[in-house]
Length: 402
Image (cartoon, rainbow, N blue to C red; front, top):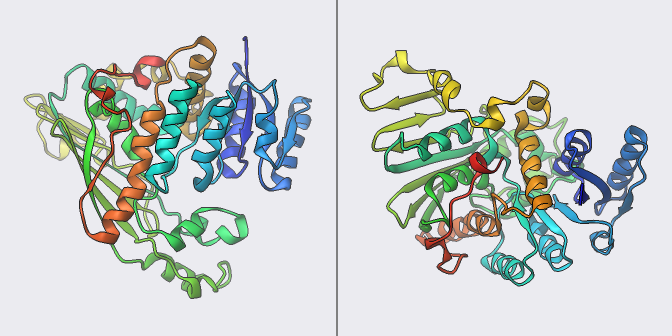
């Protein structure tokens, strides 16, 4: 197989942008089919393929029609959060190499079914957490692997992103975030920050997350935003209200003694940041200060802030060291490009996926567990989706496989 023939299921903002990126710059992938529940989205992408590439593609509003196509080797599942797992399960059963987009799970049971289906079918599966391919994240991971931080003790990260406009216009733009913020209260989008941290800590590969506690602030930001934007936001949202707390903090303890702190912060005015922080016995990296500090090497005063570039010059992994200006324009600063290049390489050459089904289940389960912790005010056990195999599984990550 020279090229991976891909069908894209889910053509909202993420699915459409990824499909266009893949068609424009991932030579190893041939996009041949599109599906979305809305016909206009399907028509848009079918027309795009014809207009931009003179290519005839399949289109349907029923994803099972796409799964029945013999000439589709693989699928990208970029549907709403609610359906990521169920559609991926059907894709695995159909023998389609599956790339599943990120989002939080709604219950443990669907994740166990995903794991069980993968183990029964052995169909290749990759969890498409693009932040595991970030410049900062891969550089720090590389330095951790070289022992520069000593024993890692604590990591933290955030999904800090002002999404008030996107959320409150969800009824107009057909975006699933609105209904989630109206009906749920938890760490609803954990994997951008947790994914790179889990790889650093060897989660599912010699280590596991054991227990979590989550707490949520009250909901004020979205209600205030709706009130202050009567000309652009549907005021009926004030009647239905929102359940999602403005800031959710989650603390996780790992079997090997490390702690993890996650923060969801999406409904207040703020800048974008993942607030990536890694702290060990020999040093620390802090994204907010853009700084490394190593014991005996740096003096932790204001002069050392913004010193990360000198370390990047030495420890960048090959994908970032060799990246061109064009590469950096290919989706989320290049992360999407590197991620899908890795997916295609592993799928075409029968290599293990760097982000697998156990990663997907372990990271996504944080959402439903955090909901339970917030609602009941209790610490919650985190299941081991590897069923004990984590003790002997080898470490794989983006620093090694691209």
